[in-house]
Image (cartoon, rainbow, N blue to C red; front, side):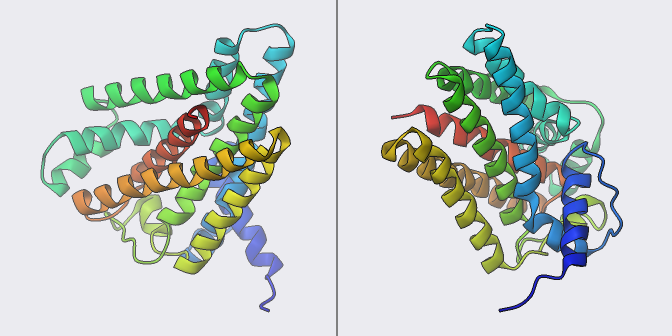
Length: 263
């Protein structure tokens, strides 16, 4: 068995938290080796974000807030802890895909600071879906809503690990996409996805065997739809960008939450 290099793991943790969250993590290496470790450990950053969101939601629940307001808080906290970058990426990707322009022009549209009509509509419906799903889950108790909040956040970052696997190219020669694209071995990415699914099933087991199965199915559903979006973006833009990573993460989180409300 290969030993894990503590130094590489530390650089990876710093890379994951420094690029994916606002937590104070000083990135000491900005190269593909650090990116490989960082994107492998991306679900850890999701766990930290999810726990903070769940704690905030639980606090409002304890204060007597209704499930709808608790859901809004649980959705707002991850946006704050990521500087809104994933949501911004989703909006930019929606504008790029909706423009029907050639790849180079679509990439220029995505790089603009403004948000077009496609981006606005995509953001609106995605946030409504997240809030509606979490509100429904919180109606079954704060514990189920909190568990779903954490699981969706971890699933979002697991989608980033899969999006960083070898064979996925970068659309630009610079930016986050160029650093992380194709860094994670495919087998390692699959193992991370499997571990996240297993951990989610364990979280669902707190509510019974059927909930364990429900959670175990919701995460792969979110990852699968995110991979469909990833493939579409690679085919449309010629590779991935930081915006594509943001869109993939938000898509995975949203589909996971919606799947947890079904059945």
